[in-house]
Image (cartoon, rainbow, N blue to C red; front, top):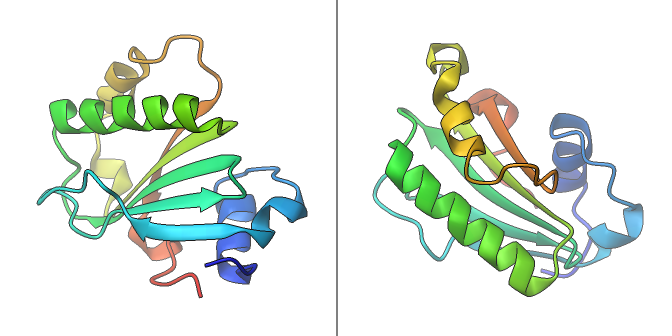
Length: 133
């Protein structure tokens, strides 16, 4: 996909809080996440202007285990670095984010100490669009 997508732009800017310039949204590629697993069968890889890389795991009933999430995060950081992206945002959508222990993300954050170009988001499934077109 190469045309601007208003739903995606709204989601990235307003929901995730990204300040990406409008120009980056002119080139968007959405595909299945190449390392998707049974734990997140509908995972998406979203490339926004070759500057922002989003790994989106929508509708996760129970968040994946720490090992699977750590592997995904390491893969994303490697792809971000090799692809020259400015940022990686890992977005996990689940039915009840409040039920996830507060320290769940703390463990993952030890994988990228001091790397302010990685952002983790835990969101209610209801705020993640079913489609971006």
